[in-house]
Image (tube, rainbow, N blue to C red; front, side):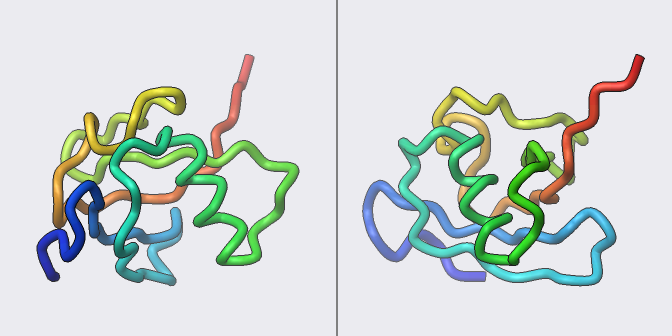
Length: 89
């Protein structure tokens, strides 16, 4: 996996929740909110747009905070999962 080719951007590995699709997200603006990045990735994978999608760090298993910049939550070469957010109960 390459390091950040452009200053202010991140490159990281993304897999869907079933791990059937994996790809490298490149040149993602590090200041973008994680929620906007998740929504953009879901749209590019043609996943349903009526589902709230989130990114989960594969190392810590925690969801990234939607409103915080993605670059404050993961580093270059991170691995994240695109996961539907469900609110049960």
